[in-house]
Length: 324
Image 1: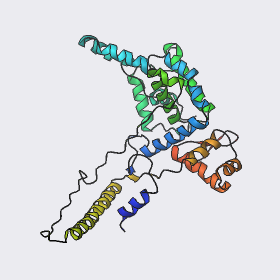
Image 2: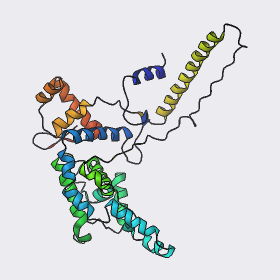
Image 3: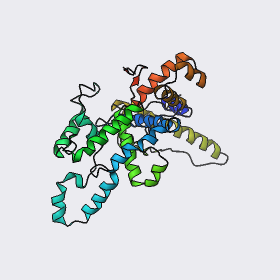
Image 4: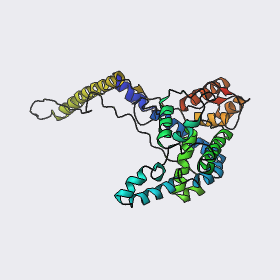
């Protein structure tokens, strides 16, 4: 049995995270599989800890809607106004950045994070460099001082940090998903009444092994004779399978040679529940083991493994960061 055939057999029982079989980090962005795993985790949070989204719809949402430079709905209205301007006014207004472009959460959070206080943040990190450059080009409109639009952006930023820390979701990607969720709520008020996380699409790396992935099957056969159709069909199918299997194997070899890595296998849904139970609801290992019919030793391995998969720093019961 070839590698490709074995992989197909395994995939019938196990599904990879992400939309691609192979992936890698691009421009400092997380891999699609990691984004998908984070999505599974947050959906479990929505079901088991609904107060997370309920709290997000309170003060963070109120502050968000008061900031035209950040609020998606206000930003869209400015964009529509911008498109109605004549060419001269468009050129003039284009230099006023906040009139036509909404910032990403990273460009709000990163410029003011002190790497000495957050050891996970490196001054040479591409995200930090890009955010600081963006900060300079945009006239420091996100400077968290009273001069910053009466401090509204700084107040919103502080509020979102407090929300994430109160719920043990103290990671940039958690705050980013919350920020994008507030965006959708601002554009669709009806979603605010029954809170859901913002929908997220994660695209795989656009890799093509050896050029266009095109497979051509070429087979020569004798002139069909009576009573040979079945034999010819079986023979052609077997030959097609061999050739296509070799094509897929070559495709995999080219993908791995280019530096791509196989996407991790999707774990069972209950591992995300276990992480929420431990990290957010503060269940003990013994309680989790009893609820999910697992040994405490198995639970003690699942929790840090799942936390590492989604990029979540665990805290011990004293609240200090714990290595995943």
